[in-house]
Length: 609
Ligand code: N7H
Image (cartoon, rainbow, N blue to C red):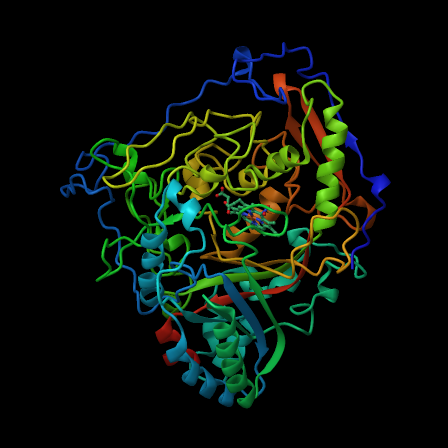
């Protein structure tokens, strides 16, 4: 395990001076604590108005000669193959209970027999979609969700299974046949080499004695890499565990060995993770339709295009629509115009169509350490002008970019708001480059009322280093260029916490951190999406925009031993900056792997034969 440095080694810098002489502006609605980072007018960077796109059928907004007036979607949005794509890729299982099992193949011929048996049990996009739509209809999308959190439609008792293979697993299954060369056609270097080999590139500790080093992972380290990963999700834990036991027994009977198995579940109805924040809120809105699915689009369209042409860009308010080729092979990627499909993404053998890459990481969370850091930071900060009265929760909200409820600090900078946190029609409606406005919603939908988010180009409210800002530049320019560049960096997150919650009592963690996140995400490029977000942005002190500092939640600085110090800048009222510094990694990798989630027919007709 990584040694946690003595508390006294953590320190905090208040780097006054830069804006310290700026007048502290208070407005009438300044909150009780008096903390209000106001941006003086002369410091305001002029911002572009929110991008407007031509209305449907205009020369630029849709492909020549075709018009779809007022439907609120781009033309040529493809039908997705609902019986081929695995359901955790799209629309995502999102169940309260999830278990993973990592297996190695013993005898390849017998393993193929097992794959043939298990293939009919794999849950598809079409199957998962029906259920997801029922849950959505049952709970609603707006502020009413607060009273319906965790509520399931009557009789719902799904147990869903998905499967993925590592490059090692594919190599075994493809060897000896006519497709032995196909693995070499997978262009993603991350997938080819595997998570353990890429660990140092992600910033993981390189000292073999550190808990986060692959040598100490529970699985996935050298010599303990999985061939197969099973992901099972269920509404009810007992039912899920029963089915997993059945599937596992079949695998073992076919010569596979279980390297690792673990289950996790949502910690509460809202879906908080161990640090206490609602997780899983912001997902890319994937473009595409599903044949026979009422409503057609897999991502619901909620903004009325007859009142706002921008509606064509969004699913939920603030949720940019991204072309499906960024996540699933065989579909168009983002193009130069957000409404026009880009090139079809098929970087490998033809049978990768309808497949996706899966990253799985078992991330241990040092909850006691994180809480102590927030408490110490708040105490130190609150003694300084501009930060009077700040609380640990305030510091946490600056490190994440949202309050524990999920409410974005961009909309409610001064205190949490539980209803906003769960209102899907409002909790993502903010950007960083430009002021946001309330969107006109389609008939029947109503968002709660909160202040509109203001442009925050330099991070005076939501720091440049805040976790959500490090991993999604939203509509703001980044070191990659304009907004479109960050579309190809998005990931579909499918994580669930593991381990018991740490109680509220202060002090050391008796279970020594046996809790964290079973982190899973799908994408079309591990290198350009997951790995880029980790090492390009979260683990960089200067990107996506400098100056910023590290992502203090998941960032790692890639250095060995004592040199893992990370810092970031937050602002108090009057734009007074302060630098927070820590030696600790609050999130420590303890296992995982890179996998490919094949289509159902690739599983049956390529891998199982
Ligand atoms: Fe993060 N956290 O609880 O602090 N994450 N994350 N994450 N994360 C997000 O929108 C968290 C991790 C992303 O579009 C929220 O769901 C923790 C990795 C992305 O606005 C919270 C861990 C990666 C987003 C957390 C962890 C990401 C996101 C806000 C590890 C890979 C969407 C709620 C233990 C790059 C950003 C939400 C957007 C959001 C937390 C890991 C990525 C609260 C504790 C490894 C893309």
